[in-house]
Image 1 (cartoon, rainbow, N blue to C red):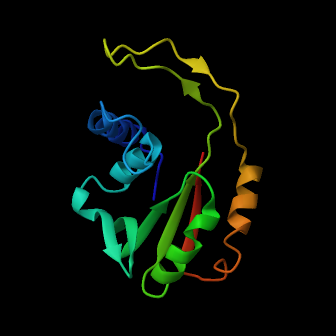
Image 2 (tube, one colour):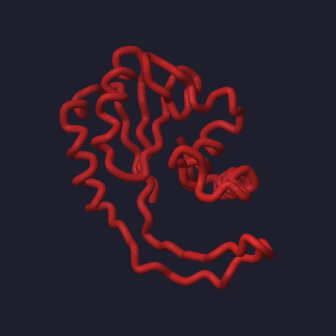
Image 3 (cartoon, helix red, strand yellow):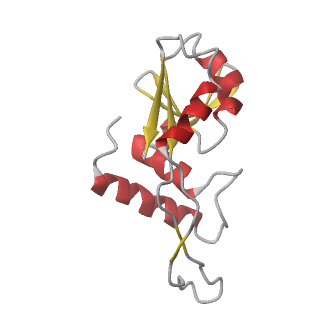
Length: 148
């Protein structure tokens, strides 16, 4: 997956923002970045949230499963174990290197002036998360992509 197409990524973000408007932060714990990445991987909703092998895959595209996980990769182990018996899987783990926080007024719909958050991740912090997949890392059908 090539995430360098900034125009397509921004379009996916815009679509995700429109769909989550008035709904708080996503559905079933799904955050904006998760929804944006699903839309980026596949614009077709038919490819999203597919039930396979007793679990739900974020995106299924051209015979490959894409799982987006914004924290705690260890939570994916049971699901990945099921999927990897039949499908190649790409886990996408976004790392926040800079975060701006703004507040959306429920009354006016106006966004406040964004402020920089002190929350940051570095690529080294991803090693800890990836290590939680240790029992699956020898599977050649598993790919982990860090999205910075």
